Every structure is written in C-alpha cells, then in structure tokens.
Length: 106
Image (cartoon, one colour):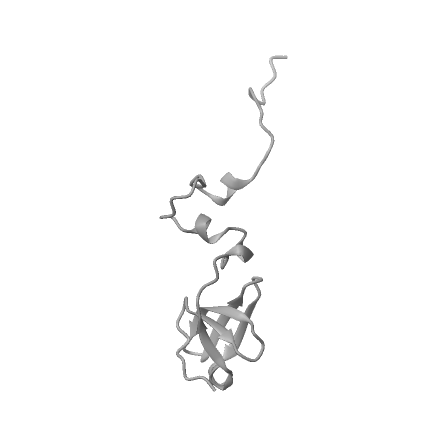
C-alpha cells in the first residue's frame, strides 16, 4: 500500500506490474487521479485504488514525451539542441511548395 501523494507532474512505478506513469490531473470533487503511461494511454483511478497500489517514485524517462510525438529535448524551450523552434504544430508539417499565386493570367 502506498501513502504517496499523487501530485501532478510526478512519475511513479507500479511495483507489481512494472509500469511507469505520470500523474496528469487530479479531480478533488470526484476524488480521482488521472495518469498517463509512456505509450500515451490515459487512465483514471479513484483515491482508494491509488492508496491500495504498490507504488514507488520514479524519475521521468528521457523520452517521457515520446507519446506526444516529440522528444523531451523538443518539448523543453530551454534546450540548447539544434532543433529549430516551432511556432505552431502546423509548422512541423511538410507540404507542397507553390511559387506564384492561384490567379491565372488567362
């Protein structure tokens, strides 16, 4: 049984299953904890279930945001990597390049 507080942003390992997850939301009204696993799966559990689990604090994996389509370095605005800063998610999409305009001279 665990008595650790489920704080948003903290990572835990389930000692029975070996799964690693991050606490992403708390609902005080409904007494639930929302977690997200490394593969991007989101799950919700009530506080009683949280307390009954065998959990240990875990360090955030290096590729913790891989399920979001970006590495941790790309997520961190302070990283000194060579990754260009994206202005919006659309900036990362590849598309066709057009020269000129839609208007035809004919």
